[in-house]
Length: 392
Image 1 (cartoon, rainbow, N blue to C red):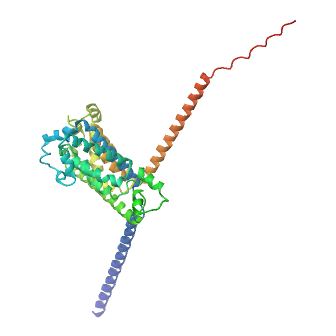
Image 2 (image 1 turned 180 degrees about the vertical axis):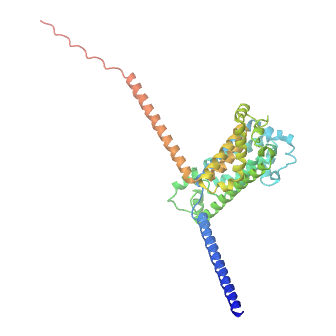
């Protein structure tokens, strides 16, 4: 009886030691993994700025979107956003809270007069142009943000969800180095790279003033927040779509582009929806890609597939539904998902093609000039025949 008790105690002690050893090993592995993840996260956040070329593309396309929106509405600006928009009732009783918040309420007050809304629109176009070319980008973003948010709060009937996303994205983009590539600010920094001076002068020259790890941290955190925001938008949109009957039965793509309001190109709409299985594939594929968008971003090949699908999705919305500025703003923000390496390759291909075309153009011009000179140069006159001497 005593031996059996001792055996049980030994087995219990052995089992306890094994469990403790397993727990210790598991804790050590988890701790090591967490430490590795933290080191990778710290390196990603602090070592260098990410998505610089993608942010440059986003800046250019967002500036083009705002300019295009303002110009396309300029002929009806007084009726849509000016004093003629009294039919909405929002000039006296704003439905957007931004219309009552300083400094956005200044834009709303300017909309009560013709000259006021015209000045606001012109100022918006000018600021968007400077933002697009990257001239004093961080400074110009302040009036651009005020004008854009105030402008869109005048009449909420003509808004879409991209306006809300753009407004939030401008806040994140303010903390990024979105003009470090393909901008006038970048050229200025390169020009004064070896110049020193006061901090204010260095800031004005777009030189590095704050420590690089600190600016890298702000930049990469803002990029991460923007990526999370876009993933939430696409994932939630896909899940909401999945709950609707038209998306479940595969006909949702057909319905909006066949309506009078959104079917701006009836011939193209009929052509796009002529094949029933194609409509079903586009409908269900859109739901699947949007709902799984955050997970598709984790792998290079699935990321390329998802970006291509989303790109065609927005192109279809822009053309078939007559919402080009919505599509352009979404495509602009999606540009940050493309690696800098890919944007460099695209830039190199464009630069090479441009140089080749320029060389061909110069070669054609030289050949044309040579042909013209050969035709225009008169042939040399024949030498006069010698006059025979008279025989005396």
